[in-house]
Image (cartoon, rainbow, N blue to C red; front, side):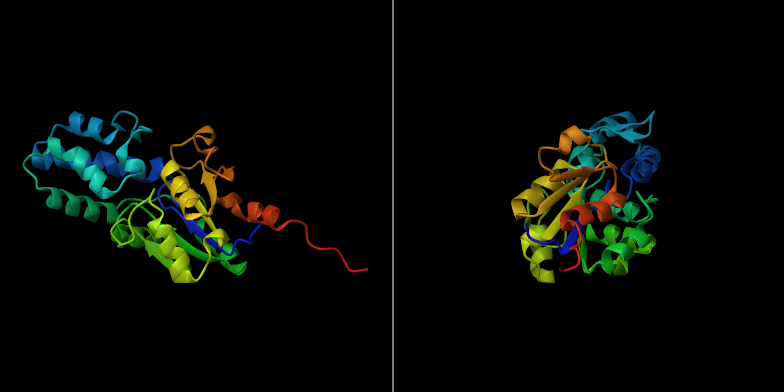
Length: 240
């Protein structure tokens, strides 16, 4: 097995707990659109795959692994008074201020991974601006050698383009990279790029929904150091 020298993270549902980060944000934007645009809140929530009563996204929601463009497309039929680019810009601006909740304490973990000599990156289907704002807000932006969103010019997952851009720009072979994500989009992209794939359960997917695409499924990214230790194997004993 080729040694892992780099880890590429998805953002939402991987670095940040999906429900706790985006549930209150979604409820807020639906309230805003109802108040400012006289929008049908119930219809918008259905289009987003968002349960207003529980404050949770449904597994089928386009917001989970889709791009901002995907979200705009499902919302536009219920907002005829807005232009698509107007809605897209409003959503991206609102997303930059979403109250992100880390899945685990992030800075100590990134410090541990960097101390192992690993190159770290983030590839998200969010726009790059909000992604950088979220990473900066968590105090970890400087830990990453590469950050790409759906608008960074490399494509969007499940296309492997942004993952291959990470490998290319950091001088890593695809087989040296571990792709870590919470959705099938993440793992399909990792497989297509020829990378090791690791699923985590801090998004909406369950283990059985990721297992066929993952080399390993972990409860959260806090378990990565132990996985890396297992992959490295036992330390060599003293020479005779």
